[in-house]
View 1 (tube, rainbow, N blue to C red):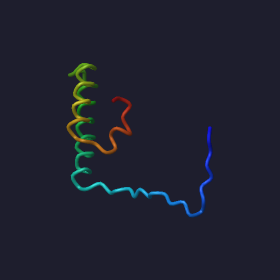
View 2 (view 1 turned 60 degrees about the horizontal axis):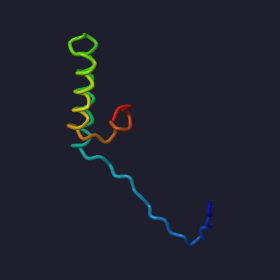
View 3 (view 1 turned 30 degrees about the vertical axis):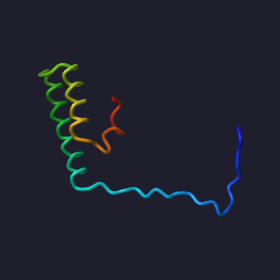
View 4 (view 1 turned 60 degrees about the vertical axis):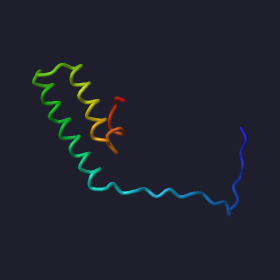
Length: 75
């Protein structure tokens, strides 16, 4: 492995985090509300596990999430 020492004058590009806009925040909220309702349907055995998984996957695509992929254990 090759290592290089950086000089004090070495510049790095700084990445500034962007703030989510109102639409993105609304999408996050709508997704979590939809998932909560979906979980209720599953718990009351009104839908199967396969249906739950399919609908959940569609929700993740539909709502274009910022945080959802970080908190979800499924692709």
